[in-house]
Image (cartoon, rainbow, N blue to C red; front, side, top):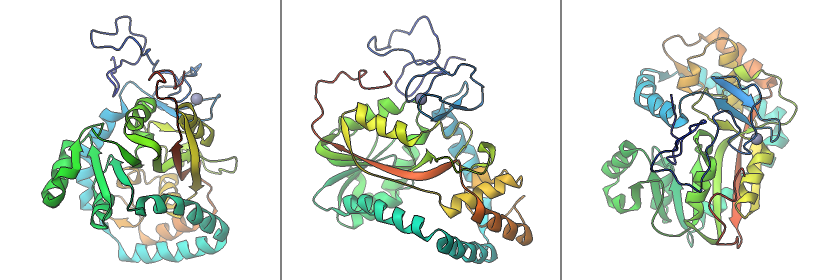
Amino acid sequence: MIAVNGSGRRNGTVADPGPDADPMQELIPMTACLHCGSDFAAAEKNSYNKCLKCGSYIYVCDSLSSELNRDFYDNVYGSNQAYRIDKVKKNIFYFFKSIDKFLRKNDYNEFDAKHRTVLELLNDKTKKVLEVGFGTGDNLISMLEGGSDAYGIDISRANVDRFIEKHPKYSDRVECSTKLGRQVNIVYSSALFEHLDDPWKFLDDVSATVTEGGYIVLDNIPVVSGGNANIPIKSDISFWDGIHKGIYSKKALMDFGEKKGYGLHSYGDFDYFIYRVLSSHKHYGYLMIENIRHPYMSGHKLTEIPAYVKMCHRALKMNSQAKLGFVVFRKNGAPADRPPSAGGRR
Ligand SMILES: [Zn+2]
């Protein structure tokens, strides 16, 4: 099949780019790194391919991540509602987490200190904030009710309608769109960047919205960890076949900002215990955890208590292939006439 990515460009080696194609924008081969454009010499389909140049992992397949995500949220997400929080598991989880906090105390403290830079920005009431891909709207509503001058956009009509229905007072704050028609000081997104079929296009879109001296925050994104991983990729919960399109290296993330003319404001990553427990489920063959993505549920085909204790215990010693991180870029006077396709992979 010929895939068309989010920007309307076609992936693959298609001879005729079609009448709507932007002649300035080249075709992206489906078997190349979404960050640096390097070709995967022997790309393996339906799996993550590591880019030797930038160290990122890209999921290569014939479907777009946007399609796979839509299928997931339309079909699987609803059926997950049959799972319920298991109070015994919850207690076990927090018991092991307290051990983890003791064992990795420095990592916890260091990350919290770094992540405070994100919270400080979001709490700054003098700044206009746009949340891109606000999803359930939990974060957006807490900013609005906290007195922030906040806006939200989401490509899901259902998300936007649900938000308006729940919070009619703020109906003028949300739009079903990929762009906001006004300037803001901060663009915030959480757990979004790894899902995108065209991360460069996303950065172009949000760049058009951010004022000079403003910020782009990519929060809660998986980042390829350093050399100490001790679990295979196939057990790692961040490697979520196709739904997470790109797991980028720290180097690649920095480069995304730099190529767009942004400076680095702050960065941090952390190997969260919760994700190690989810990966531990995968390791022991409880693969439905990929869709549930919650550490202490009970329900169909999930583990009984003794096995759950074993999983939490194992998670203590795990080092993930991808940590969870954030990066904050600062727009500090990039040349405004930079052509849209010149900053990228490019
Ligand atoms: Zn690359």
